[in-house]
Image 1 (cartoon, helix red, strand yellow):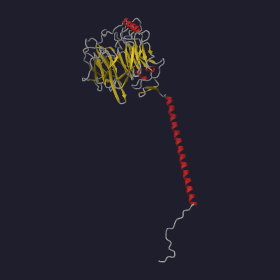
Image 2 (cartoon, one colour):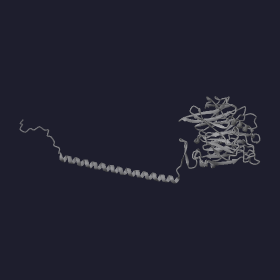
Image 3 (cartoon, one colour):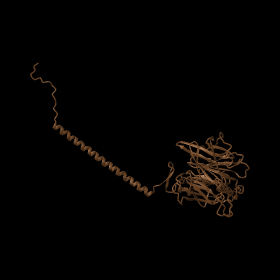
Image 4 (cartoon, helix red, strand yellow):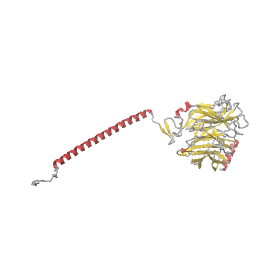
Length: 464
């Protein structure tokens, strides 16, 4: 085991990677992190960006984007940019940068910083994940999970410490429904989540095939169905581990070329890049290192629909959307987020005269519509989703629906007819019983006539 670990470290250190250089493209803004919460009142997608040429983080901003609501921006003061991250619950927006964790109230149209609470001393390159769930019906609980002192640490929504675990933290943390996943080096550790923000160790599994060498760099994300997607950037694959197999037997999404189709391209360094996200059963992957001919690092995106809830066969992953960037060293897809209608792509961008970031959002509703009913995008075509059971069930087709409707009507009339016959039989039986009772009564009167007693005194022979 020790020899394997040493071999792994040796291989990782021998790899030559190309780091992201935000100054190679003249566009001013780095769109670094994104988050979205469908259960919040305004349903914004939050986009964190900063000025690439700035020597400090004073230019950090969070834009609140919505297809039908004007963009609102939040300015965030910071002395330095150090893996800035945002994550949203239904009522709070958590912001982590340069060892500080803060929260914004997002129940208002313009989010407001809560100046009364903050946490310092978080690990410099800590990931950020938010648990937002009703463990008990009607009682929502929200927790932020970060790394502190190298340990997995949980805070509640007012940033009060819940617990600092003795478990080692990782480079990536992601939250599903029942589990929290922590990725570090070549393995993912899973923890079950329970009320009170309690994390209980469940199991671990390894990452990678026999070719990939970038375990220690590539990101991971977990969907709300507890499906885990690990990027294997140097081999162009996504490793998928699902709860149905107890996370032990991975599937793979193939042909996800993070760096392009040429094998001679130096792999891009994916460390800390939030280049993969999920929405419902969609998984969106940013190909931010993509190079095509002379167009170096233009980036791109692929969106797949995962039919995990309805199919686990060879056709499980359906490619829904595919595009490449147009700007050399634009790194399109460095960060990524989506909802049922809109794709949001990070990387390099420019602030337009109206104050809106250029080219960040793309309408993808024509591509996603077949898998979505409203904002619900969980099931394959021909199925509907039960939010209570968290499962997909077959829909009834039109012809089947007509047959079922006709059968229901026939059954209704048959039941009415049966009730009518039974009622008529009951009434007839009752009438016959009444006639029989009347006849018996008349017969009894004839056989036993009633003799009335004469109560008057007999006065015959009495003379007053």
